[in-house]
Image 1 (tube, chains in turn brown, cyan, green):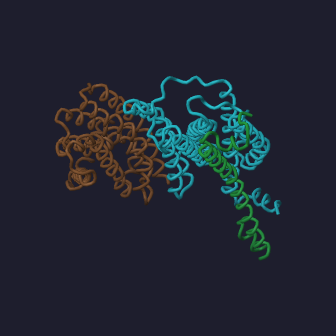
Image 2 (cartoon, chains in turn yellow, green, brown):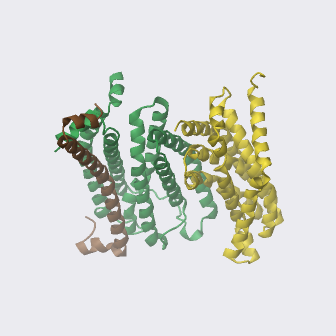
Image 3 (cartoon, each protein chain N blue to C red):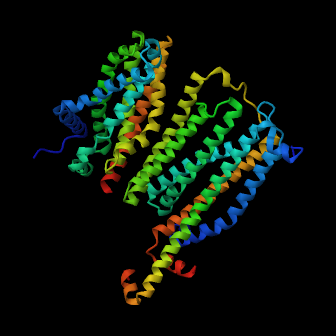
Length: 229
Length: 246
Length: 69
């Protein structure tokens, strides 16, 4: 038996565990991206294929789809660990819950948000978004999906013990997603209008730090409630 | 002081004292509400720009103010019940949510009705209305979460966490919606200048706001009494109460 | 009173329908909100009373058993 790892080493291991588990089922990792692609295809069908109209709506469309993809994957974040009991073990372990939760959220962000941000330019071009706005899109998605992961995890932690959590988590979490949507889509629109993007990204960064500082407390409290119930 | 806190933990005492409070607060609130509304409705001059439709302000603004305050009351009660595990706070939190949601609904509907003669449409995505709509979602989320849990003790704690998260987020949401609206504001519905409200219009408005707070408190107390009964049906004092009220 | 006649009060220069609808709806919702807890409380008490009466009819022994005392 080796001694208990230090807090940071533990977080590292937890993060690696989450990523390994996810990468063992690559299709599951690709699901949000596939969802993203399919919903992007819905918009020209619903709005008509006129390129300039699609370009005008593209910032909002891309951001809303990223938000929904994030929401759908957030629901599963704690589910399997809750069902096989490893979440309960985690709560009982002497490791600080704040950091453990951070590892979960970080893994979620890397697997959905960062991947979505990386692949978003492709769909942006398909929606005729000018290339000049792409850096703003990627930057705002990178920072914004981090906030979304934290907020979504709060919802996931509160609903993980419920049998019908799927719709509920959307109702709980979507209002808190709205500021991120506003500033994220605003950044891309600003870039389209030739405005500096840095202020938007700064606000998203501030939201990200804020969510990272306070979010894990709420997630930890939510997990404790779900385990107790 | 401590005996007061001790009594707060006693459901029969709380039930009785809420009933006593209700007996004088309800008539006072209704009187204030009637006076404020009739004053605003019939005894003030119309606004020089909006005409008589502005009279909706005497219900729209109080409902909006109290609905927002109600969310903070709910979150505060939630925090107290989380930290000190006080049963009263848990009951108060559960009792607040439907009242707050109803007031938010009033603010939204009256705002929408007000919009028709003022802006020519029933719904405008203006900053204030959009914020109210999000507030309604926040309330409904709390109610939905509470109903989803079978274990009501856990439901209370989960709602407390959610409403605290909401409290932290409300200023962010409101600021972001304000900013979003100022960016997208269509020129046609811009109201120029901060209109300073005339005192003859202000006094009935203040009275009406106070009255709405009173009505809110009454509904809260009533809900708390019903909730206490529902949670204590197996105890002797509720059974005696039921037997005595034949 | 600002309005000259009852009719003027109802019409409010064409805004009457909106104003009165808004007020009516508000009062309706407020009265529902205020009445709901009382109705719930009375229903609970009535159900409990019925339960107590049923227990009394079935004899004191069973009543004591049912209430768990």
